[in-house]
Image (cartoon, rainbow, N blue to C red; front, side, top):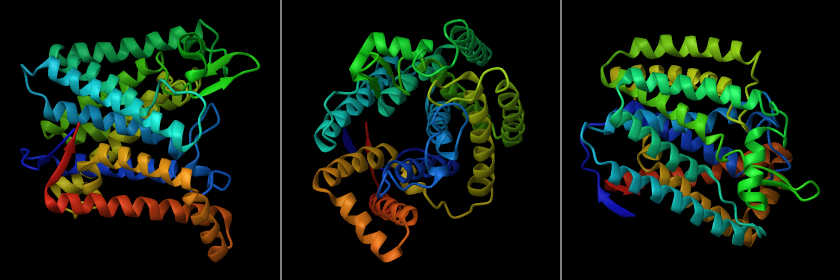
Length: 349
């Protein structure tokens, strides 16, 4: 990890802002004052279906793909991009070691958000460098259709007994996000098999990034509407499910990401609107990892509980008090990232 001056070539402001708001949303839903008092839109769906919160992570992976398309050049080094992917995985595992201390967890979790981002970045960037766009579309289609068949023919989409959960159980057991000691079954929303369709999400971002680079923003809008329709219709046959990262979920979430990218491109690249949130996008991994470490310390020291109690006493409303704590936490990191942007600092992994 190193701190470098911000001397990169021209960036699409829209992508930085979009990434920044994805990070803001991540922090907002990850760090409430109390998990017992959370507004429904800020929680994940229990299984099938979706909430706005379920669209945050695929949106971030989509933006990773957009950044790949904008940043990679023909002849780029595969070893360098895979080294970066490995660093993301290692940092993700390191964060879970800290979480074991902060949250008094008995078992180390193998999979995680940064681990998935690292794997998706490495595979998608490799394919972006080595495959023609038509072949990239073929890979996307093959992954989504193949994953559909794999799940449908091997237990379907029921909790614990689907193929993805069975593979998670076999590979990592108690080291998954969820483990049922009574049955010995496990599940991880960032598990190995469900990372396959997440790669498709990232590749869809790669294709969108190429359209952005070629200044065909109208294609983003049209593709977004088409994917929303396809995802919703596919949901009738294969449920939209974030836990399994189902193929219908990939297409549906990508539809929203495409529409947001089209909107932000129009607002910030073409209209020159003030790029509110850009500082969070420039140092996205710093904000994510730093807030995680701070949250672990706060949890160990009881800061979140104390802050929630104080907010609840003032506001006399459980969910509103919990949200207030989360907003203050996000605001702190937003201010810190803004100060880093003003200094021209970027922390890269």
